[in-house]
Image 1 (cartoon, one colour):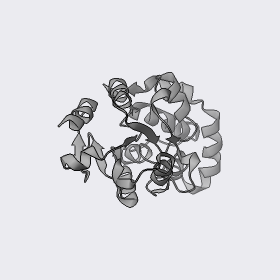
Image 2 (cartoon, one colour):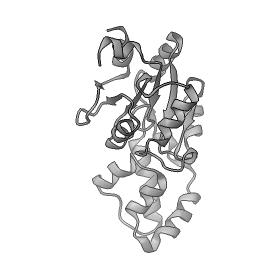
Image 3 (tube, rainbow, N blue to C red):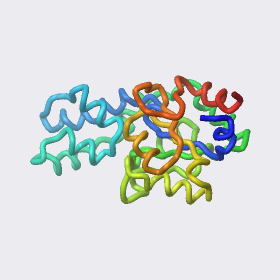
Image 4 (cartoon, rainbow, N blue to C red):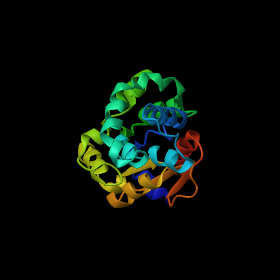
Length: 210
């Protein structure tokens, strides 16, 4: 992005898993618990990658045979997320990065395909104060990669698509940004097509001073 394009940015939208937090181990444990209770084998590596980027309903439908889908959803409701939240770690430097962005005057939001676990995570890691709004798959009719979630944030902030940067780590995030017409910055995933690639959160702040 050019210096002029960067100077037009008014807000940053963050994906959750893989960007704000390292939740891969927690997600794998959660979905494997569901499979275990159904008497099914643990997820393959491809399935682990899928559940990391999709909604819980999409993920369960992907890893469970159709005949067991309703039972799997019942099992899911019986597993408190507190059983796996201990496996979640904050991405290094994220708190300092968010504090800096807010101090400078940028708006920050979350756009995630998580459902009812997002609030627990933000409260547990003292991140709630930095984000408004927080958009989950429960807040839209069509979750990512549909652009509805980003349109909701744009409307909340009363800004144009070019004034928002969406930061994500998956093809789902990339497609969401492209569909909404917003710049996309890829976090620790050089395989994605992005306007900028970030390897850590310090690079985000540095990009604004470049």
